[in-house]
Image (cartoon, rainbow, N blue to C red; front, side, top):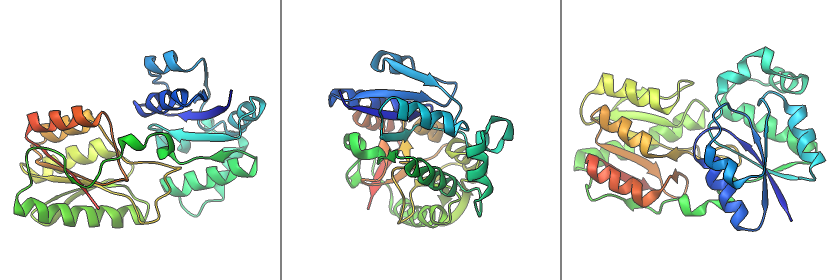
Length: 267
């Protein structure tokens, strides 16, 4: 049976990928690099190996010894782990020491280059998960107001610019004013900060750079994001069509309707 290696972070995506891979008749071999292992993942994959993300040599050796030459990297991986030298092997230290900066994309591209030089191809995350990518349009019953549409267009463009300089992917705007921009703190903290500063009616936009590499990351929205937006009195969540994973799409749309949030996918 053909095998696919999966470097698994936290969240639901590793399970969804492993299930899709198994449904395609391919055996998933999991390297779990975070402490939060999904119980559902254990039901899908027979082989799960807990190895720290900074142990690059050990991960590569495991895959090569298992006859694996293609790997997907998926799930949330805390960047702060890579800033702790005690959790890094010599390969990881070498990769980081040669970087011009420590942006997420810069780190991941250097790691991918290292893996591929060792004979392991890193595949696009969307290859087995295309059903999670939304088409363009308003995905909920509640449609944005004229003012919200202006903020959506501005927010998506601003998020693309922020992503283009490798800072983050999420911005919070209101009435044409940028309220919060994501950096190392992550999406949730950005929304919380945006809500505290902007108050009722904030618009959250999530986007990628024009040259985004989907082997590295696919922006992802799930129930947690919607509920957090609701808690901060936000009104709209805008994402890029065909470039964002929506977890459990139809269920997500129903939750957004219940919370009176507009969920919009834009080109």
